[in-house]
Image (cartoon, rainbow, N blue to C red; front, side, top):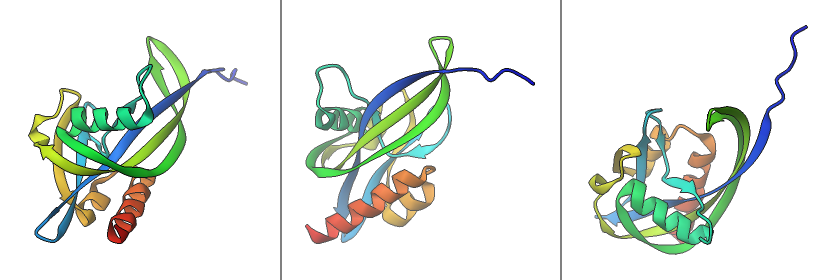
Length: 150
């Protein structure tokens, strides 16, 4: 019987946003295509030391989606586990993501950073079809309900 590899577990805390705008009565959501995985996701990233989750969410949306936003409210928190390599060591990660609803102010998705292959606006239907992760689709659905009640 083969020995089971005992992996070190690391907690990760991230923040991200469902950034939206209304164009001629059509609701659009900012989505990003990650590198090198080529997965459509919502913009999110690690919370830096000394940064609040709200500040991190706005920074990550600016960096990854190329847009500036106004924080509307907290949306949800998701958590999941995954295994990956970090600094040459295989680890198990417990990731928690704080999600925020964010209203578009200015900027262009083409102004995204190098970590992202593409950033763009998508209709809600397109976003739900593109997003790879179920928990992110659920966050978008929750955001759409909230936007409708604003």
